[in-house]
Length: 379
Image (cartoon, rainbow, N blue to C red; front, side, top):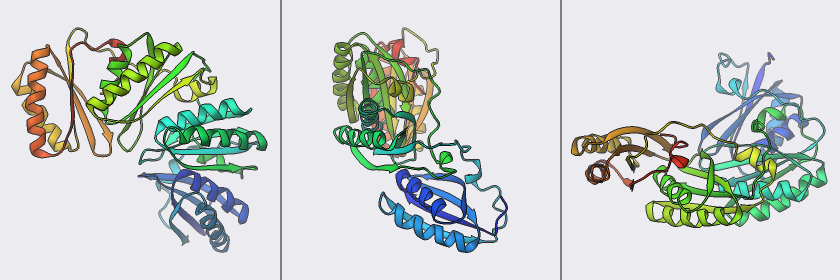
């Protein structure tokens, strides 16, 4: 659409942005051109139209956004030049929403979002429409259904999510505006599945998650579903099995996470809703890993610190570099393999070196790493 003006509204929080976008389209003759996020939960929507319409839309949008989050900025650009390559143009395509109501649950951390989404799916006849992260550990999910069902679901989701972490906002839009579909997470592509129980362990840092996952898979008969790398340094491990085994795994994993690093949250979901499993726990990608060797992990809050640590580790002992992973929130981790004594010597040398060049977050040695976990690891 060629237009003489664009309007840019930036908020902290996706519920605030979706609420604003819906009102903007309804308040004036404007169209949603796309959205973009820069991290730390800052997100932007761009609308197109005549100058007067853009100004009216932004006034309405700011007022609505303030009810659900923080308004960062709002700007009108008349006769924009050279903006065809702006990142909002590459946003997701519009998905027609039809006549169903839309509900948004937004939390800080994936564990409360999963707890809330499960409660939503069980409380009313709604369908879950995927989830997404916008930085700063802030995540959200969408639900569709009739107005009464979505409201019931949001009430249940809010209560359940608040038991596991921080709720940023809930939002109900009875009649979503045209174009709002491009603001929403991609719908789940996996087949719907069910199981006896779902376990969630969420940590700050990669090494704490691996330590937690190792303890979890060794505590009982569970099956790892996936590892969701979030933002703000958050990593969530999801696994399934029967209720007793999953409960034991959650307890063992939580205890291990506290010893290795920082545990943000843990959750046991009994008989998770099939929609929940399709949305959050579809099987993740796997990698072939070496068996029979010890696994050593080191994590720092400095890329330089990690590079210097790895240099010393490879010089100090007969270990093999297996890979690295940048989690976010300035956290970065690396892994090595070798016999137990060599891996321990390498970690000891790496810890000393990392501390000289930045903050050492965690080190961890797993003498025997089970493939049930390692094949899902991201490094």
